[in-house]
Length: 105
Image (cartoon, rainbow, N blue to C red):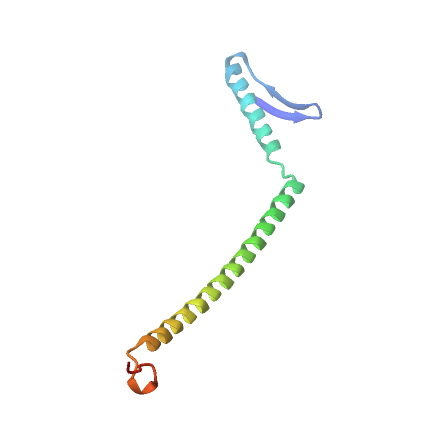
């Protein structure tokens, strides 16, 4: 079996004894060629996918920044609530007679 290509395309020379093998070879080579043609890169598609990825990363960055802002605000609120609990606890503690809170009846 011999193979090659010319200006008209690929060629294959074989004998009747190896015809089945040669035909399988031709089919396999055609499939390889089709697969190679499908693997061509469409630059516009790749550029669009990269742009979508960049947009998504910018959105993630914005989301993370906002989450940080929310956490910071929540921490400040928790600190204020803790300080208010202390103030309330101190305010409702048993008042002393001398501070004017308790008056005789």
